[in-house]
Image 1: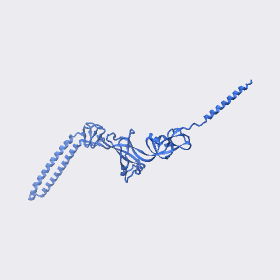
Image 2: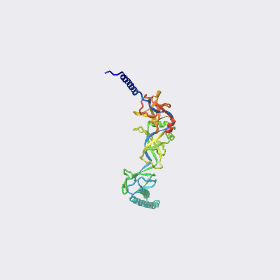
Image 3: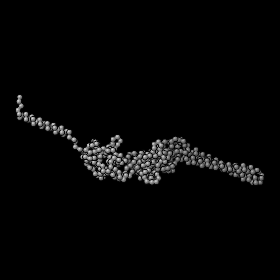
Image 4: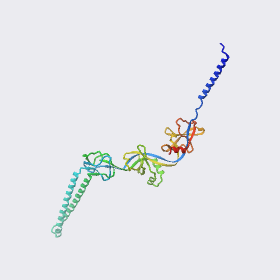
Length: 386
């Protein structure tokens, strides 16, 4: 059957149109996607304060184990666990009856010794005129004088026994040596107390000031010595700025602390040296045994600042994407010397004036072109201060 020419012409035109559409679709599928528009930040320098943190264990100014200096039954407990006491306040009472009797016995012995002194003195007085008249030998007088001296010595010994007995009676009332808070009391009324007990009656903590002990490595200690002015270590500590204490809930303790002492030598096992910071504790909110972090400030006059959102990590190294020619990005490692809550301070890797991608770096790769959207450094710092 012969196809009319008109139909053949229509089929030909349709084929040409279909071929053109397929070609355009293929070209469209191979076209590169448009460059992403990403914010770009210019690296600047700025005065800033960075912090170095050290784990610390807190102790009260005085932590005193309260122990009995005499043996006996615990007669009374005057305080409650956790209560605040003042220096000199009674804490415990040991049964004092046996010690009171010891005082009575010692006083009786002293009276007897004093009577022996009188007796010996009478003998000396009796013999002296007889020896002078040569009625009796002077040997008897020398013996009488020796007996008198022995009686005086015995009286002194008896007097010391009275004093010692009275001291023991005083020890039966145990008072607070310092002001502070009472710890746990493991003994109860009626317990037999001994001077050799392994556990104290309680622990008394003076927490008017809190000592925060932490360790510096040898490198940190050398950096500390080089950082602050002063001819001696004591002068360097005085010139050091106040430090902060970050407590367990990551909040900053409201009182500032002062560095006060450094240990005399490095620990041979850890290679570190112990340091102490002192914090006022007027409200008693900190207690012995608390933990935290001492935060030491470091003033930087011209710190290279980059936002933390502009960084990413690969194998413990921190990188940024730098904007280069033709708006192509290149990853570059940076060395972090400090940080705040939102920024890093960089010592190596970027310099002031470099342009880095601020956010949206999750899908970037080296060599990718972007459409930069410049962000003002001043506006960024105003929106998110250092």
